[in-house]
Structures are given as C-alpha cells and as structure tokens.
Image (cartoon, rainbow, N blue to C red):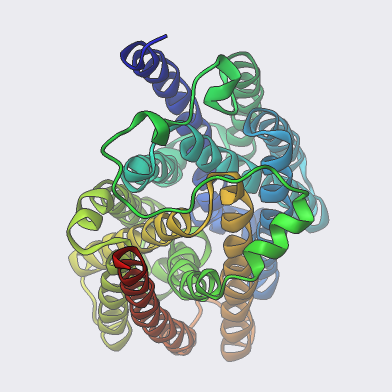
Length: 441
C-alpha cells in the first residue's frame, strides 16, 4: 500500500473515532459541572450545609485526581479502546446511584464512581488523539476535543436547568446513565487503540512536514517503569503546579461555587445563575478553539503564560469589585474564567506531548492531572466551603466577605501558575538551544 492510500485510510478511521471520543468526552464536564446548577436543589433536598456541599465537591475532585495516574498507566497498558469502554460503563453505574440517592453518603458514592470513570474517559481520548494524529496537529485537535467537553459543560448550565425544571435533577442523571451505556457499545464496536491495529504506521511517520520537536516513541515497558520515567521529568512537575492554580481557580467557579456565589451575593434567580454560568461554558469553548492557532504564534508554553496572566488580572478585577459588579460584568468575567481555564490547560497538555513519547502520554497527563486535581481543585473546593461556613456561621445567605477571602486564596495560586509558566519557557528555550548546538557539531 503506497503512502497516499495509507493517508486516505488513516483519515477515514481517525475522524470517525475522533467524533466518538468528542461525544463521549462531553459527558465529563457535564457531570462535573452539574452541581453548580443543581446546588440549590441538592442543598434543599438533602439538607446540606456549606461544609457538606463543599465535601461533595472535595470527594468528587479527589476521586477524579487520584484516579488519573493509575488510569493513565492502565490505559497505556491495555489500550485506549478497552479503557474508554470500561470508563463509560462505570460512569453509567455512578450516575444511576447518584440519581437514586437519598442520603449524603450515597450521593457521594455515586459522584466518586463518576469521578473515577471520567478520568479514564478523558485520558483515553487524549491517548487516541496522540496515537491517531501527528504531533504538529496535537494542540489544535486536542483543543477542539476539549472544546467539545466544554460544550458538554454548556449543556450543564441553562439547558440542564430547563431539564431539571421539567423532570427533576434525578431524572437528568437517569438520562446520562442510558447515554453512557449507548456510547460504551459504540466505542467497543468502532474504536481502535492504534493505527497499527489496522496495519498502518504512526501518523508522524506519514507526515513529512512534522517539524515540532517531540520525543520519539519507544518500546512499551512495564507501567511502573514508565511511571518512574515520567515522574523523573522536572518540567512535567512545573506543568502540574501550573495546572494546580489555573484549573483549580476555574473549576471552583464553574463546577461548584459559581452558582452559589451568584445567588448569595447578588440574589439572582436560578434562571439568571444558569444564564451567567452559560457564559463560562461558552468562554471555555472559545478558549479550546483558539489555542491551536495561538500556539503556532507564541508556542505552547506561551499559551500557558498568556492564559495565566489574563486569568490573574481578570480574577483580581472581579475580587476587588465583587460588591458592585453588574450583570454584564459578571457575564464577561465568567466567560473569561471559562476561557482562560481551558486555554491554559490545553496549552499545558500540548507541552506534555512535546516532552514524552506517545506511549507515555496517558501516564504523563494522568500524573499531571492527579497532582493538579488533588492539591488544587479538590482541596480548594473544600477550602471555600470551610471559609464560607466559618465566616457565615452556617447562616444563609452567605456574606460577601466569605467569598472575598476565598477568592484571595485563589489569587495566590494564579500568581504561582504565572511564575511556573515563565520558568518553563526558560527551560524549554535552554533545551532548544542545547539541541541546536548539538546538531551543529
């Protein structure tokens, strides 16, 4: 088979599978962000206080975080096809338990199962992209992939509120259960883990125009050896700490406390809250779409830095004007939070792809995500709950002072993220200079 025929066959398979993983990944942000809209209903029906509601977020994000590293290593070992199918089935089980729960304990169990499985869905999708698309396509293709995820987050705003108004929050997750089972069946029948499964070489071998410096693939090794190799790379830890600040700050608003803040500080209705959260989802979609274009201009690490700086400035504006923001300002700020959170993280994942071979992408992204979600998102969800509960003494509506203190804590993490991006750019430039000198000898 000549090269043109192989390219034609590759494109036929890669875009079909890409469509499937994009639809599957839409489930992840939808399930993750749903409590931001459901928050008032969950608090009322299950009689939760702020600390308990924060615990719901904490257990979800810690379960998601802890699952990332083992999920990445397992998927690197068993293949993205099996990993995706199993993850979708576990999502279905967790969603069903969540929909039937009558106590905090059961709803936490359901959310934790969903969290663990969503880690697998995300990593399996990224693994498929790294295997079926060339390195120079990665930032754009992965950005659009995450954009579909943001679209799932969009459905978890105003559209979800409409569904809840008509059927209740429990029925919405019964629908998710059915959808997950259907996607698992489709994935099992269609997905292939690697082009070699259908007799094709890797995309980088077919792409003569690939100029981006990347780690070449290596023979598969034991998952523990692969994990140790990934952990030994200091620049991956910079990306992990960077994501700790940017991802945690974004998720604390769009996935849990954003709706509670709007309803308590500004007295907005559920419909108005859902409408503003929609702007955050739209911002995330836009951020995922433009990141590929911007990375060609300023590099993937440049995307990380610009995202962190814009995020920090926007956050400080919101924080210092929290008591007087208009509805329009809130829409713009929430859109910016969604944009920067997605834009910066996609840039970070693209740098990860530069630093490790395709066979270790799942492990590397799993490690970065584990650190960022455990010590970032998971912790800060609960930190916000403890701060708000302490200052409010359990009384509602929660005072604006409680949210202001929580936001100052978050601002500090964005400062750390900015410095991580600056240092990463310097180390990448030094590596490129060393490589250029070596090739010139």
